Length: 303
Image (cartoon, rainbow, N blue to C red; front, side, top):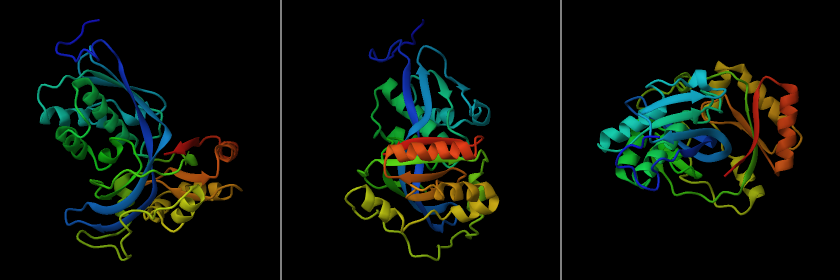
C-alpha cells in the first residue's frame, strides 16, 4: 500500500473509522423566520446508539463510495454532504491531507434523523484525526457551519440545546439514558416542504412564546420524561399533513402499553417512543415489526 507523504505517523497506513449516530430532536420549537428565509428554532438534540459508519483510507485519492441499505438514496457524488464538508474544510485550510471515504449508509434518508449531517460531521472528525486538528479548530467549525445547519451540533455528538438556525449551541447536557424505539415508515419527507408547510413569512416571529434556552434541570429519568411532555415538535403538524404515514406511526407507538412519550424527530418522517428500560423498548420494537414489517424500526439508547 502506498502511503501519501506528510501523513501523521499515528495514522500512516491505517484505515480510520468513525460512527455517525442518528440525531433525535427531543423537542423542536420554531421561534421565527429570518428575512433571508431561514427558520429560527430551539431544539434539544440527543444521539442514538444506531447510525451510519464512515471510514477514511489516507492511502487513496480523495473520493467517496457508499454501500448499505440507504446507498442509492444517499448518493456518492459531489453533492453528498461528506465530500461537501471535506471540500469546505480544505478550502479553509489548504494543504490538508485527505483520502478515500467509504460510507456504510444504514439510516433511512430524508428521515429527520440528521443522517447526512452526522455523516458530514464524521468526515470532519476523520479529517481532524488525520491532520492533527482539534474539533475546536476554527476551520473545522467554519466548515461545519458552511456544510449544513445540523452539522455543528453533530460534530461532537453530545446532547445539547441548539438555537438560531442550528448554529448557536448551548453547553453539553448530562441527560439520563433514554430507552427509545425509532420508527420510519419508509416515506421520505423533504425538509424544505415541511418547513414551507408552517406558512411562516420571512421576517415573521412565531405566535407562541419562545422556548426557554435550556430545559429545566431535573433529577432522574422519570422527571426528565415528565419535563419533555410539556414541549413539542412544531414540524409535526405540517409533516402529518404531507404524509399520513407519520400520523399512523405515532398512533402505533402511542398504543404500546409501556410507551411514555411518542414524538416526531426533526422534519420527519421518523418518529420515536421513549420507555422506562431497554426491555420495554425491545418489546416495543418487536410489536412495531410485527404490525408493520416493511417499516424501519430500531430499539436504541439516546444519550
